[in-house]
Length: 341
Image (cartoon, rainbow, N blue to C red; front, side):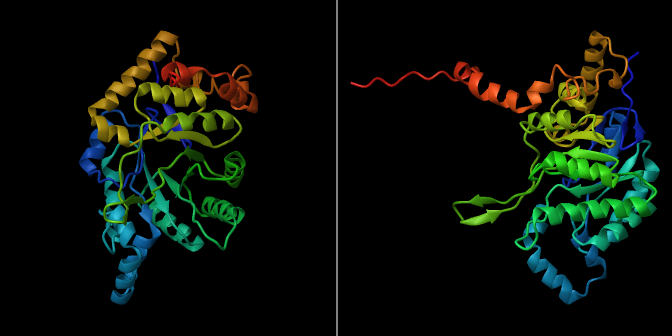
């Protein structure tokens, strides 16, 4: 019988599909339905330091905050001032109601804030904590090395004060992502998630204004994730998690073949609704049955850099071969020469 159980940051879960943190509103009932349809764990929506600070802010500070954060509030319209107590209360209630593990998500700026709010989330009973590093702080004053060193310090500190595992959600925007992952692993991260969906403004040419809004992730993202997971596996102690653009059960299989222990998904649920989760799991089970795999571990990392037959695809040789010898584009998009008289 096919067994889909795996581990997420060391936490046993029944299926490899995890409901990722989302700023799109998901009610507790919807989350519970997601678990009934096969989600192995739930990442609760992210707690942002700026929002948490509003709990104790004065009216003057709140007005200043409102002016500075206008675009951010357009991006996260569900967030209200002073939501810290409500956020923690909702996490606690969900932990009590849900059979699957609930994992907290946190995004902070200041070093001390990470510890303070991490402890608060742990006190609500979450099984683990996700550090949302998906959008690095951009600054003229600090080098990329400074930003990365701060992230290592945060992990090391939290691992020393928390009793629950800690994961890190990354963006792809690092100078040397592989080296950064190696350092995160050494700092004690229990899982590394590739990748978050960073938010960037668009431009409305008619009104000549910036637009900040939240939309579901493009389905074209997932092929950008496999190579990073495949190159990293099995060179970390941390679990590797795929996120972004997981469209179906076969995308989950691809992530696991690359070396992932599990995947996160949100956008697919919005596109196809909750019943689709069962279809994804059926696709995985049927594929495993036809391939004679009993467990996910039987094919985890089979097409990673660790496999000598796959290794060249992850190296410069693979890059050169694709760029020089690939005929895919000309075949798909043939171009006729323009006649010149």
